[in-house]
Length: 114
Image (cartoon, rainbow, N blue to C red; front, side, top):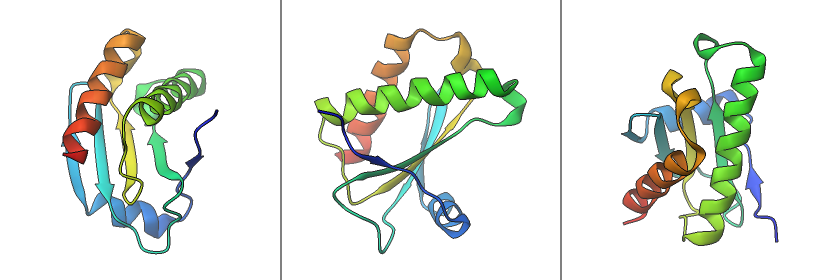
């Protein structure tokens, strides 16, 4: 069963989440906040890879990896669907192993939900 991920689309949604709480780690920064009018049956999340990281191929690879990791985390853990999330990748994320990144993000989401 594929988990349901909904992406943020409006500029004001991004600005609103950036004014919320955040957790940073070595590989990414996670912003989270409760947004009004969002579907609470889906995981509202967006991934950002800045141009500074590399060309479009590298940025898309990062976003694919993060999307895949979030599907795994959503199936394993209880993620608070009332919150909307924004994950901003850092440059070092290209060099890290998939399992290490998955463990790190899983730990951060457990921290957010506790």
